[in-house]
Image (cartoon, rainbow, N blue to C red; front, side):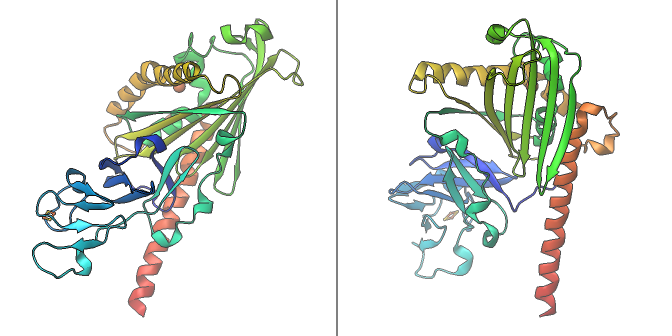
Length: 346
Ligand code: FES
Ligand SMILES: [Fe+2]
């Protein structure tokens, strides 16, 4: 599996990076994460250049990491700053450092060419930080690959079967899905007319109309907005839910899965925070998780399209995303090949 590299990925929730040395694998690379004394995030390869000991097993002195094996020391930018076995420090003794940025409650990391790591390219999730709102982030380590998770999220028709009783009341007539692409973003709209309501939407009636908007961005950042209204009353304020799901590849077969839900009521109530966190994780772990685990096992690491899947109209969003991802990865590969041949011809 080839990953897109020149894109911002979510490495961690902000609150999960502190003064401890922590290892997190991203795109198959071991990354060391910690905060400096000033609270800035340090991210570097979790691999000492001497004997490849994980630096996360070392010790933090101020902002300096000391390797546990033979004591080489590195600063927060990955530069070797002390060699106890001689005065010489060479270029090869520095550790690769990854650009990071902290925004919207997440640590974002750039695993590709550092020169392209512009913070403006971080997806704008500022609705999460807007005054009068509260966002709760949850994390699970998923033992299935990121692309089947993205397929799952872009095709929410599965809710009418897999999530009956939790957040769907069952199949709805007149559902349709449409898709749109703008630059590298994909938008999916799914509408349901005159479908069964749910207990928390009972005030809208026994039957409701629903519009679901999904906005997918590279880096596997997906935003969802669900608007529910009484049947035939599109102008009603109805009920609006906003949440996001972010899937950062850990390895070919595993994923860092971040879920966030944003609300505009009870914003200072930690009990509501805890309930929201539990709700979002429980449905994923109990309902999506077992199905995606099973699919992951059946695929034996093969690419989905190589397996010749039957395609249904509900797959339109997921297939469009796969096409965009393929184009972005192809562009990245040809870009790096061009820069290699330009270097050679100099
Ligand atoms: S492995 Fe790190 S100093 Fe030897
Ligand atoms: Fe689901």
